[in-house]
Length: 99
Figure (cartoon, rainbow, N blue to C red):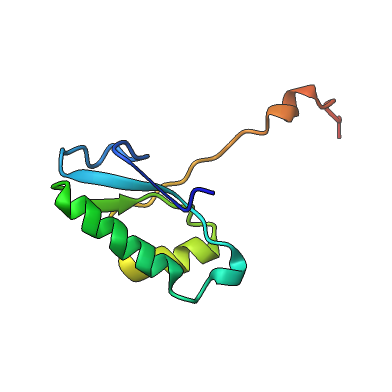
């Protein structure tokens, strides 16, 4: 199981420097939340990234997810907010109802 995914490319065009890297995936089973697992994992990742000459770490998370919002904003400062609207691909197959 992948607990923490860190990639050079993130979902933002704002920062694209050689010393910047993104947390692009993270998950902790609900029964392990609040026990310090993720803060420790994040500290370990930061230790390794510093050794690899990264000085900035960003995270992309869904702001509609209250668990993610509560966790990530403890450790990171928001520098941009975005909203993506997804069009339901099934909408075209539905019959139009006249009112």
